[in-house]
Image (tube, rainbow, N blue to C red; front, side, top):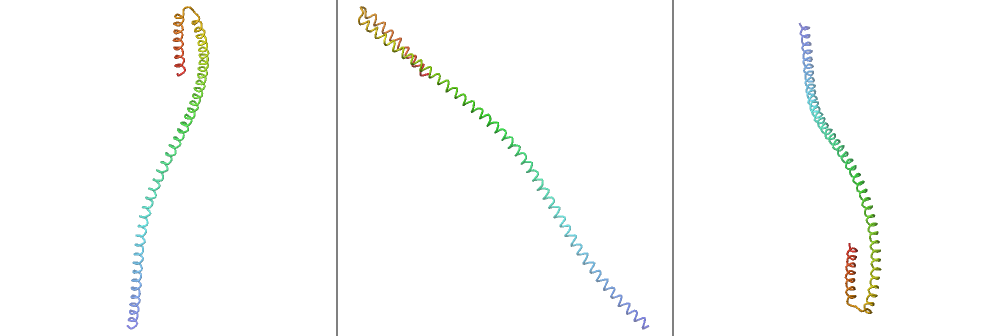
Length: 175
């Protein structure tokens, strides 16, 4: 019996050691499970953050795409406006050239007109001088003539016609 009791005590001791080992093992298992749960929670939180970041990145990429499209449209509009501006500048330059040509032609025409008017005025002045000379001669002949009243009337009529002609010439020169 002693051997059997010693064996029982030995078996009990082994059983206690195995129980303690089992408890230690279970405690380690629970610790591992707790660590795994913590890791799972950390992983789940990280995945949630990653998904949120992915959504934020997608949103930012969409905004970048929208901005790139808006920039393309703005560049196209700028190029169109530059083309229109270039066309307007060409039209303006052409218009300016036409206006310059027109002004030069007008100046040339005005110069020719002025020249013609000056020649006509000089001609009229010569005619006037000739008429004055004739009037002096007629006056002298009236002084020497037998019928001075008729000659005076004729001279007055000639003077009126001469004044009318002079006034017409002045009016034409003013235009």
